[in-house]
Length: 145
Ligand code: ZN
Ligand code: MN
Image (cartoon, rainbow, N blue to C red):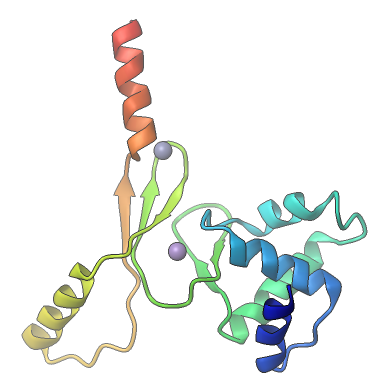
């Protein structure tokens, strides 16, 4: 908590208990939650917190480069406290969003730059498909049929 408060302070964000709690949830998960997910996760420990506060806090974190918003074609945005650019895999079956930490994107970027002479500032890479768990569940169903 101390460390997270320091991060917020370093970005000149006012540290409130609610803000800190919201940032903590996002910081400690790799599930890329929606604002509603965070709200639900904190409802027991912070009963007076509103969904609007969650949205406002996420917005402040985004503006301070402490969170990114993922638009993956879902109804609601997903949030990520991992700022460093990384590709995401989205399961079309269960909606899971998985981080992809691989160097192959670096080569890809270099090739694109070479091929197009385009100065790339940022990129968003999403892969859509079926996750491992959903795939094995499907296999399981086939066997049971
Ligand atoms: Zn899945
Ligand atoms: Mn991520």
